[in-house]
Image (cartoon, rainbow, N blue to C red):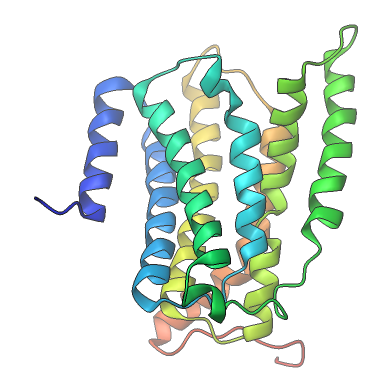
Length: 249
């Protein structure tokens, strides 16, 4: 039987995009960057069989984000591409969480002592509160639906979901190449989506603005800024990628 490679998956997604959706280049590149980030991380876990420097808590947060945001899979059909991407995000993120938690020898290399951000207390709980308040304010005279609250919650949570991973990298300082590429593609995905919003605002006459999405997307991108700086700097010099300590000038 023919083996399926990561390039086959990307080619399939590109064909679906061109055939089923009218999409600008920024959104397409953003989606592909997100796909690449997942492929890179899965390859790192499968080939290296090591979870050192990877935050389980970040991926638990992303899994919550995708599950709560994509409940419309059960209520609304947009396109085959849209449905495939949503299912892929949920399934692959769940697989990453499972591999780090339960698959040997990967789970034995996961360092809980470095991944200590209290994500349920300082990420999930505040985002639930903010989403509930925002949904009630936005609904004006009517009560918001549970889907609206969960969608708003997922927007807030995604904006800070990368925090545990960035904290882990800061503690390890030296960043493994595949891990660095994974974080880079994740940040690039969000930056490209900002360009997508700008493009759509200027080229789609009836484009509906979502200022909450804009704010959270920009916040998420800003969290990657320091990482991007040292990532590009290390690539330019061709040396090992390492993050500075608080005492490094």
